[in-house]
Length: 593
Image 1 (spheres, rainbow, N blue to C red):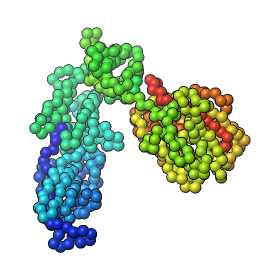
Image 2 (cartoon, helix red, strand yellow):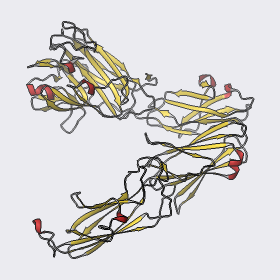
Image 3 (cartoon, rainbow, N blue to C red):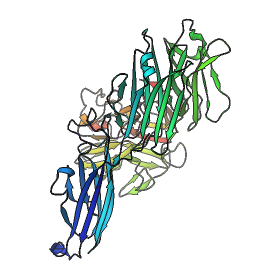
Image 4 (cartoon, rainbow, N blue to C red):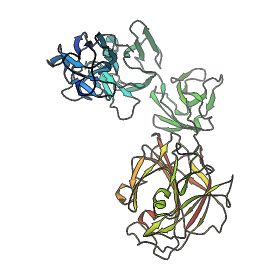
């Protein structure tokens, strides 16, 4: 990885000012300062535009902004080189601190493509009265450059080959380097990379391997060289570092002839288990799948744990396995192995992975509450925004429907009591949820569901006592399966892992997610109740059903409500639900949708 040291542009900022007066006269003709911008280009990099940037993108076309201390832009241009009003001209300023920013125009570099560098630079300068000030900006590469080379011997040894570079950042397009085609270098936003090589011999036999490039930083230049190994089945990887230019040259040796080789791919690590996948990338005529095995160990352990062939899932050339019983937040290593003849084993590269943490719910026992006007909020104080309830809405009609309860608890000194009420004109269901109550508009409200969270639990566990009333408020909504008026009300507890916070308007049902199909939902679990618990605590365990086993969540929603159809203002004004001792369960067997 090369820290690109060639300067795209140097902005020379020249300031000349004298003292300034106050109010509208501070820029009087004899009390002004001047800013002069100059630009110098010094780069040998070819900057043509390909996919990933706008069609008219030119990395050397710079946007320049001059901002005062308040962040107000006092001078700007989208094409400094050709802007005659700023390039070489003087800008009138008052004394003070200024920030000058220059970057490639018409793209933010948040994508990938061939020959699409993105340059950025900024500096601060203080303009003093009656003083000539100067400043420089060095615009440097803000994304990452990757070059791929296939040696001459490599090209004569194989019929075709492609190296696909992928970013670890979601949504960034992969870029493919094809042997025999020179498209230049590819650029990516800063993030870890993987290089997957697919080669085909002249007899049509295909092989592949994947290698990771970690600790990537802006201005790094990775040069990937593919050569032919003198011998061996798996091939070696060597890294040559040029510290003067910070160029990292990766050389991957690929065998010309195919023995049996195996590959281990990136692990999907959870907190106590990890899903692994690998493959047989080449095999001889006497290949025996029963000789495949897997080994893993803690990164600092001396001894490997062996997984027998019978425990592996083998489908064609693909191998998979679930490693269980791991310790959270721990580094591990695994590899695949093939027993060639009883004395000689072929191993894949060793793949490192780190198990996830097991974050807990804040205030899951509902012990912490603080007073807000005429109601209580289930948080420690106003600065803690984790739980909220329907109180901010119902309290505006002088009805409180969610309380701390001290006389009926499962553990600790408090539980949460949710009690529905008829709030003047409509039903107000008792509810509690992770997120924030928004604004009230009449009887409708904006709700923001979810709080930051990155764990992957398998269930929500806790205790509840539900006392349903007979439905006596509102009109039965159609098309949603609501029971008839006079039936037992339905209480609900749900948990969801999300990629983003959900904003819902309870007067607009189209803003509510479809929990089974919404792409923002990583996992979901729900339990519904319509019978009385007779004033007894009942334990519950709600499994999370994962829609994706690889997507990691960013938010969690946990919710309890006295009336499932409370958003339609339909239910019983006498339904009550007590909740206590909520906790997340982290198991080895997540349920997949």
